[in-house]
Length: 310
Length: 310
Image (cartoon, rainbow over all chains, first blue to last red; front, side):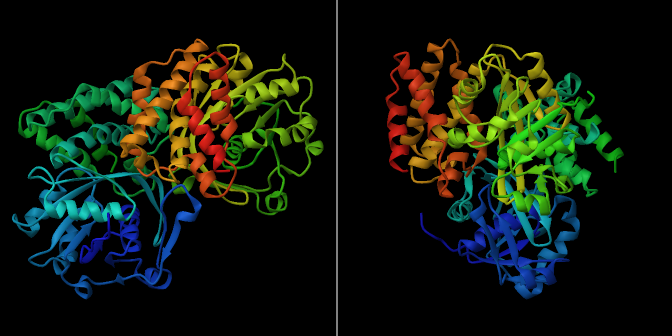
């Protein structure tokens, strides 16, 4: 598998996820242009420091970095990677506009549901938009410094069905950069499945007072609620003809057991006083389920509790 | 669950595992005495720095640290925690001797099989010896600086059967320190089960040339060999009346899938030029299986290849 250039790549949202994947892509030889806001000065001076894995020698620093303060300085891209928080979507549009030309393809690495639709509404229905679901643990530990604790993988999918040629192309670039990848049969299937874990474990660890996942599994009532939430997601997915097996739900518990005292991303946001991605992870699946008359009382309750904590 | 003192605790092997658990125990109020070799000067000056999890605010530094250069300065302990590499066992005995009095209980956090037996041979058959199997990812990134990337859990077991009162006591101290814990029905059961993952994935990632676990799963021949190795471990365990279900073996693959480009501990040792724990992870289960006439050709081959790389 050789190197294939993605052309000019713009990256917006150089946080834990964007810094990690963007850093790996740039190291592998892709022409990545990083758009910074507050960290710009720091990026010019120090570059981007990435710890890619559990292994000491895998630490690297990109310096100088193709860092920009204004999207206009970058201009139209062949690929635009959106890794900003989904909570920032509305403010994002203005920043993205100068980067998107008539032939720009988009890849969103954002959490939860509705991100592809948001970009499609903004940039046109005939545009190639790929979703990349990130199963990984990364953390922005300082300005322009990202640590990846667990490599994990990225699942690539598109709304129209199997991956297009462009989707395959961007996936291959990730693989060449050393990232484990999977192609999803459809983005919808992958998204609903990811929510089977994210909704209960991201949500309940926050609403139960900021506890780790092992304490969810040790508490009968919280485990019962986690099961209910999974069943509601399963029912909503089925209404959209995404069939999720009961065994898949069981596997979510088996995966969580060895994680121990794990803190999901929403819990980390909550504990750090950052905004939790309530709408994309909880609000949007609730609205989609309710729209097709799926009864989701446990998710309704969780969504209300999360909004009450704001 | 309140604090319960373990009395005077000695800790030998302040590396990735010992530094992480010892640091958490000391922070929780336990009276931990750390025995250092080459890092002693550094420990006195800078203390022990621990990053406990994926969360920035969880970084802490113990300074001053109860650090010692000679075991004689510590003297007899109520609990002695052995976290040194199993490869160092023979050289360890001399260092441990001054720490072990007539009523000292031992906890080994070492990898693989034979560690409890080794300590029993050295310190007497009527001594309380507890095994703690660590499912976690930690790394020593600098002298006296340990990072924990994935919290995971510790499984406590004893050879005689269920946990004794002393075993329960040390497990509760770990829990009070914030560590996720489980009690194993028996140490033998827990050990053979852990080897079902460790033998194929620690071994094959090394012998296949230093590759990550995702590449094992993507390669048909390596996946086939991983299955064979698991089946051989399952057969050897059964000969010792430890019954491991086929579903458990299947689950090992399902756990590995989301890990992505993961580097098991033996691979990290191999890549860093450190000695791989060949005997405790591969040699000892092979000898135990062979002793009761279980045919283990795939493990024999792997063991030979690992020794050939030395």
